[in-house]
Amino acid sequence: MAIVELPDNVRVTQLDKLVSWCRKNSLWPMPFATACCGIELMATGASRHDMARFGAEVFRFSPRQCDLMIVAGRVVMKMMPVLQRLWLQMHEPKWCISMGACASTGGVFDTYSVVQGIDRFIPVDMYMPGCPPRPEQLIQAIVDLQEKIQREGTWKGKEFDAPSRQRPKRALQEE
Amino acid sequence: MLRAEVLDSLKAKFGDLATSEFRGQVRVVVSLTQLHDVLAALKEEHGFDFLVDVTCVDYLNYRGAKDRFGMVYSLLNTETNERIIIRAFLNDPEPTVPTVYDLWKGANWLEREVWDLFGIRFEGHPDLRRVVLPDGFEAHPLRKDYPLQGRGERHNLPVITRAER
Image (cartoon, rainbow over the protein chains, first blue to last red):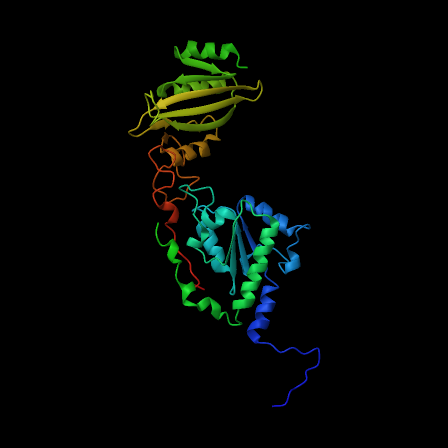
C-alpha cells in the first residue's frame, strides 16, 4: 500500500470526532438560575471569568436555541415541572450541568418542598459541588463536559441510546 | 412609641384587654369575637392604615400553652410611625378566624399564606386557596405535627430519562 503524503492543510479524522468537536466548542447554555448559584453563573459570564472563551458565547434564555442547561440553585417541587417542560423543549443533543449543592443533592435544604437533587427527575451529565461554586469551578465543569462530549459523542446522538441512560439511576430508586 | 391613648381607648371600648410591652413593642391580646372590631377600630379611629403581616404560631409542643394556634396581626401607622401587634388565640377542631380583607386589601394573600401553611380558615375571604405550595399539596406543613422532610410529596413527580426525546 503506497503511503500518501498529505499536505499540511489536510486532516483525516472520524466524523464522530469532528462533529463532537464542533458541538463541544459551541455549547450554548440555557441558564436555569433559581437562587444564589445564579449569581455565580452571571459572574462566570461576566468579563473576569469569561465563559465565552470556551464557546458558551450566548446565554439564550429560550430552550429552543440552547444545548446546555445549567441548573443553578435549589429547585422546589413547584418549579420541577417547569424545569422538566424546559428540558423537553430543548433540542437534541442536549446536556445538563447541575451547579451547586442544592441542584445536585438538595444542599442544606432537606425540607418538604425542595427536591433532593434534580437528577431524580432530569438526566444530568455533570455535577458541581459548592455553595456556591466559584466561577473557576463552573468553567472546569464546562471543560470537563467538553471532554466528555469529545470522548463519547456521535454525530447521530447514539450515545444517548445507551441502556444505562434509559433508566432512572439505581441509587435514587428508594424514597 | 405607641401613644397611651390608643391602648386606653381600646380598653375603654372592649373591656380589659391583656397588654404587654417588650423592648418598645406593644402587644394586645384579644378574643376571637372582638378581633375584627378591634382591628377596625385601630384602622378607622387611630389611623393604623398598613397591615404589615398576618401570621400564626403553633403552640402544640409548647409547655404551658392553653390554645393551639395564636394569630399575629402586625399593624403600622404610617403617619405617626407607631406599631402594634394584636394576638388572638384559637383552637384545633376547625380553626376559623374572620377575615380582615374588608379592612386591608393586602390581607388577601397574607391570609391565603396562613391557610396554606397552617390550615386556618378565614370566613369571608373571597378566594381562599393555596399560594406558596403547589395546588395538589395535601397537608399544612408549618404545623408542628408535620415532619420537616415532608411525607413524600417532594418526590412525587414524573421522572424523565434519556429515553424520552
